[in-house]
Image 1 (spheres, rainbow, N blue to C red):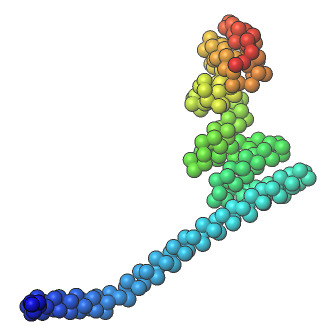
Image 2 (image 1 turned 90 degrees about the horizontal axis):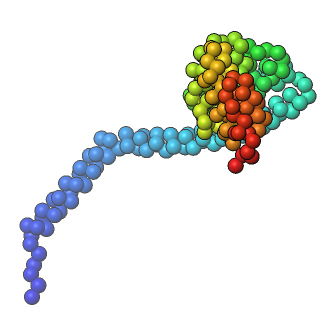
Image 3 (image 1 turned 180 degrees about the vertical axis):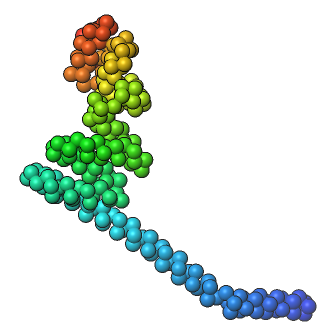
Amino acid sequence: MAQPPDISETFLREVDENLRRDRARDFAKKYGSWVISAVVLFIAASGGFIYWQQVKQQRSEHQVEQLAEVFKTIGTGDTAKASKQLDDLSQSGSKGVRATALFTRAAVAIQQNDVKLAIARYRELAGDSGLPKPYRDAALIRQTALEFDQIQPQEVVARLQPLAQPGNSWFGTAGEMTAMALIKQGKKNDAGHLFAAIAKDPSVPPSLRSRSVQIAGTLGVDASAAIAAPAQ
């Protein structure tokens, strides 16, 4: 015969359920509006973030189209109009658009014989830590090439030291400018060995390797064997 349920257990379970129900009701009364507001704000923020990402993407795509139009404008010879457009695009939040605009603006400035402005644009690029390193390195090379005769040789050496290393993609160009700066400092032996290292590097363009052999020879360093054999 089945045992009747324990009245005390049944009573306690009902009390516990009622208590939890009362707590939930009281919490809803006290904090319900805040919870609803928080949920609404979260949904709004999430939606706003997604929308902003879409806006940024659309804006970036539009700016890329604007860059294409700028290149067409440059092709027509209207550098004044192109300069204004490039100045606007150089404020872009897109790193790629910004870097391209600044590089192009510097190139247009050189075409306009405004070397000072070109140097300023390259300096701005080289010093922008928000841009990828390849952009900054390329800008530093261009800036230094334009400033080479205006700054002290030791500054050239110090500035290009990280790039004037075998294995670096800018070794040829940075190494050549560094070696020329060393010659200005009277360090011909160091310069000769650096030119020899450039001549031995198969990743360096053949014309630069050949020139490096010749200059190294005039500095008393024989690097002819480096260029005699074909690059591997």
